[in-house]
Image 1 (tube, rainbow, N blue to C red):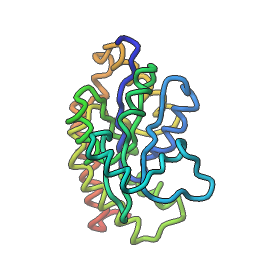
Image 2 (spheres, rainbow, N blue to C red):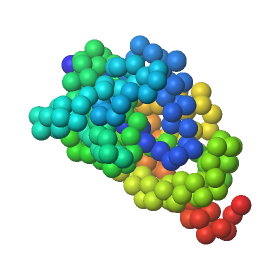
Image 3 (cartoon, helix red, strand yellow):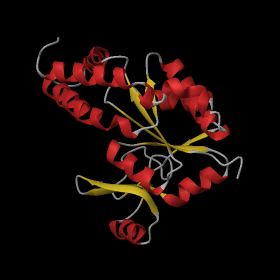
Length: 222
């Protein structure tokens, strides 16, 4: 179907600005995209709306959804299930909207196995120092938490080659615009226009980020 949307997975380092990019993308192109709404077994928090924040279901219902293959992917955190309902994703794609899943690497690889046509994008800051500065700039996390996030980023960097595109989030407007153009290119088959944004074209940059992250962890930079 020509006007069918694309399934897009967005992952990236903590502090890279994934959430901010998604908000900007929806602000600029609300009719083109749908952010995936997850199902969860945890209780709603004050102000959370059914079908907006999450689809709230019982554990029994969620496990039935797993058994009936009704989820695109799922995971368990702190005793609660979280997952992406397949019916919601399929409905949005059929309406011509590209569906964006903001998930971590393990989930992204599961999506690619189930949906080979899915487009995987990895978001990073321009360099590890900028990533570190953004984490510090939040002013909400201890040094131990920041180091843990940097350690996690170093581990995650090992999986970047599994992605299709690298999005360097220098400014929010430019980053959101690039994501929009990449998705349009995939939908229209104009992928040759974005070879410079392919992960395979950015090996040196990715290795540089890895080395910088490891240097931070060793205390070689400040």
